[in-house]
Image 1 (cartoon, rainbow, N blue to C red):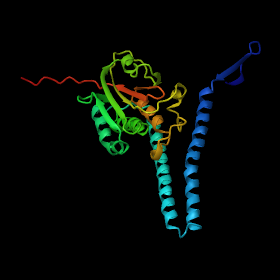
Image 2: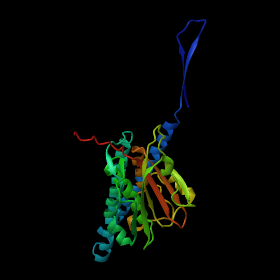
Image 3: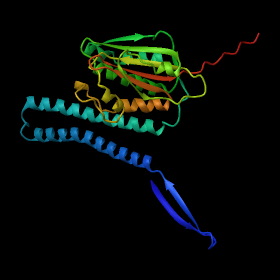
Length: 295
């Protein structure tokens, strides 16, 4: 708290003073978040940059005429450059989404069609990993109020994560549910699993309905203590590596900000050894009644 006191002009027999108390908790918290964000971002960039500098120095010196070492080092350098590119792209995406987070979208998106488009886009990755993708409830339209590119980004992030953490010959389920109340949208999907709401929309006065998409994998799962921190920037569950497709740690943070802009919600359920399920739900688009044609 910051306190400010000032005397006020008044008659001598009735002196007055002004006292202003200001709660600066949120300001300090935002400052700490900004410092942590810059520290994490610089660290994430510094590691691949140091690796690139070291390999360049080696190629200019001891490995100048070693063709095998040169090819191996160039492959590693390309992977590090790709990692930096993904990080910069995610940082720009996160910054852009935060800038417009207070402006709710007004378009209409078919969530079922978006999910099928994402499945087509990740088919090569799922084939290489030998992970089967199964869709439930994707036959009919599931219209939500939203921005199509951002809705695609949400589903893409969730499906990408599910594939990355799935075992070989595993299965990822993408399930769609329509016409849900807020309580139904946030209801458990995995019986007996640890469950936590990562984002909850404000309860309106109307009887709004939601469309939910749940992405479940059969990977290693997560312990309860990791769930509250999943949407933190750069947070990764210790011991879970995604191999050649290592992430930036920003995917779920981006997902949370997009869902918040759409006035939706998100929950996570997980049990160690039995996989995880992420559910994102969005307000259902209002159905406009068509006017009857004139006689």
